[in-house]
Image (tube, rainbow, N blue to C red; front, side, top):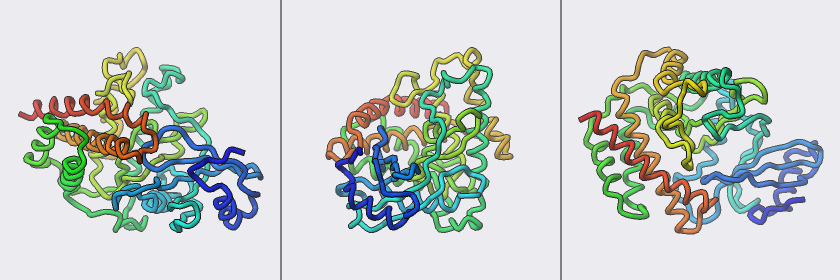
Length: 344
């Protein structure tokens, strides 16, 4: 039995026994490595069933942060929608059970790829995995928000402007050090008219390869993970966020594809991947593309600086990983300023 110090084993065991009586008592808890937001655990029941638990961190939290209730709600709404998600089983908002709110979902057996090179996949087969990602993202953006019961899941309209205001305020209020180039990037975003139209879609917010589970042997996404910052927004934010992968260094905390020979490795270029998404989404090309890359460079840098703040405050889930992720901030800011240059 592997009892984790940050979860009261006996209390959780009693709670699960009353909820899942046919699975036998909780036998083991294993915490998944990595992750900077909501700690995640594999639960092994004595009857052999595997479940996954995600909880809020301990300590003082920002009012809107670590919203596991939103994660649970959106995934429950997407079940049977065509967007692959794990089945939601239990939401517990009672702090008295394990000290913080948590939810439990089905364990999804498959593969998670941490390296966008897909080194374990034959080069001739790799494009199919990228196509699966693009088609899954397009299916998310096609979800009928009203039919899914998510019409109040966020504020419609002016998504980019609201995001710039939100993350700009958060960064200026809690920044871990002075970053003049980041201030310059933020000022440009604040002053530059947003080119996006007013379409509204359900957006994931952190759509990248390692936030999805693929089928054990097929190029098929069977579950999209980590929905904490999902909301109603603009679909161009998700696709441009994922396309930053092509611009990030291969040896960084977020392995990218910068400098990689796409043809040799059987990988699409950024523009080829963007075309796969547009075809699946039924839209034409996305004009003023550099704006969206610049936006996501700032947004991601602000998120990472917030993680560094949690490291300094002693509330980060994985401080070492948080510090490594923070090293990417200068690359992101430089990338964003490069996009500004193309707009001059």
